[in-house]
Image (cartoon, rainbow, N blue to C red; front, side, top):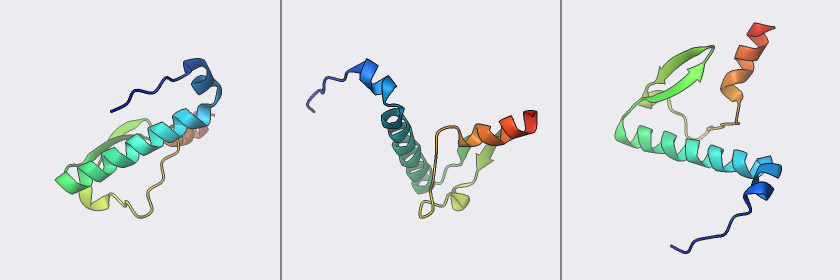
Length: 77
């Protein structure tokens, strides 16, 4: 595998690149957990939740960075 040089300063200025990488990693993790029959662990409403593999919907999968915290912030206000 060829190594790429990454301008870390540029990567942090362009947050969407980081968000895309995190989203891709989350989708890969969800796919792996579903395939292996393992629950996903997530954070929702200030709690750790286990999502059973049969409830992991890869067709409609969306993961935006911070999704889990938006509900928490709204509740805190």
